[in-house]
Image 1: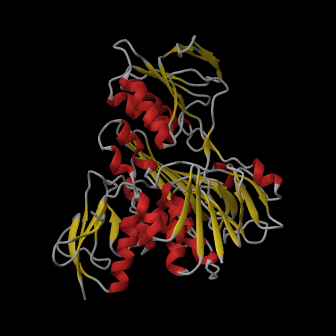
Image 2: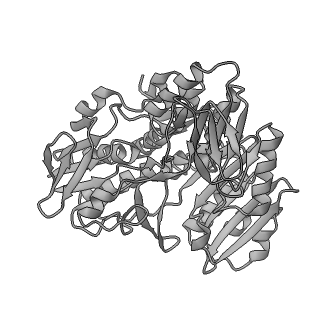
Image 3: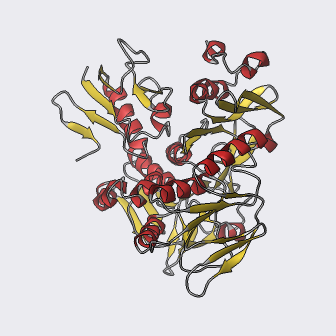
Amino acid sequence: MPKLRIKVDPDLCIGAAACVTVAPETFQLDDENKAVVLDHGMEPEKRTYERVVNVTEEEKENIILSAQSCPTLAIFLYDENGFQIFPEI
Amino acid sequence: MRHVIVGGGMAGTSCAEALRILRPKDEIVLISEEQHPLYSRVLLSDYVKALIPRERLFLKKEAWYATQRIEWLPGLRAEALDAKNHFVALSDGRELPYDKLLLASGGEPKTLPDDLRGVSYLRTLDDADHLRQLLSERTKTAVAAVYGSGFIAAEYLDIFSHFHLPTTIAFRGSWFWSKVLDEPAGTWINKTLETQGIPVIPNAPFLGLQGDDEIEICETGAKNVPCSILGVGVGVKPDLSWLHEAGIETGCGTKTNEFLETNLPDIYAAGDGTEYFDLFSGTHRRAANWMNATMQGRVVAKTLAGERTPYRLVTSYASNLFGIEIIFIGDTDRRHADETILRGSVEEGGLGYLFLKRNHLVGAALLNRNTDRMPITGFIDRRIEIQRKKELKDPSYDLKNLLA
């Protein structure tokens, strides 16, 4: 399974919750109304805005869709080689 | 198959994008009144405040439309519809035939009956550019006013505060969101604004503007407000007249069922201007927010592609008004609810209004109660019957426990 590094910039996040709606297994809102990153619905170790997650191709496509849904483009996605998949540069 | 989408905002563009994946060979035409490729309206106030550069607003590049084989027609309006013969008439005189038509042109800001230089609306990128210009040309003695009491009025207060502009706010009702909130929350917000040095003039129906070429005074039924810039946020109204003439059922928006189908065959609607049948509250309603536009666009794409799909989503909108976190979830129209539960209090630092219909939560308005957002969304989404209201009323009770 490919690895995906998922990062939310909390300064950009406004709690619109579009990511949570599209990919609830990957994003949830914290008490600050900011999106945190989950690993398949779980939060191993600690609550965090950045996480490396093993995903299927289908899950990866859905996470990209959730990032595209963010009105402030606060979600950044990188592949295993550190290449930024989204937002496209 | 030729799909014509009227409206190049988030609902129309997300539909076009999803439809291209589902139907690679179909023809897709996207008619956009604005000249710009898709941008984020949510970021406009950050752009006005110069916190982000203009190019950061754009969610699509101009070249994207061609690579997706979407025929993008910027700068055009659809002005008439012939549903029988399946075509729309455009503002350049062209008649465009369709097999399936999506109406996603959103809403226009409601305007004041008067206009003078210095009056600002905040809906489009051009509006934001105009406001930036007004702000850049302001004199040292400039003062601002805001007329309205909703999310756009709140954005104006935030912008003017950022520029340290002395600002007064006036509105028709007694407090912000007067159709949703009641006296304790309304007074809390009014006092918070006064504490920020913003005089609040409630119960002030708009009477007119004074000034020669430029605005000098905003006249209201309560008081005259001197201002050189006036930010107006009094709601959004979709242009429905041409649809109504074509036989499309309209109310406060284009009426659809839960599949986003209008009363006429092969015509659908999505986004801010749509009054859709909400499966949670069991009523028709309009939800003008980003999430709703995005997801309605994607869902209706499935139906256009032949996979008839209901729209079933609890959307929400969040804002921060000088430290008060405000979140509206689901249907916040009190008229649709048969019971309202108050959760918390101003004294406790957080207040929630939970709207119920036949013992089911259909919506909520939360002030500084962020932790309730996810469980309440879950309650609405899962149609859980509320049997124990005591816990809902207890602000210290963690609502997640009821969802488990």
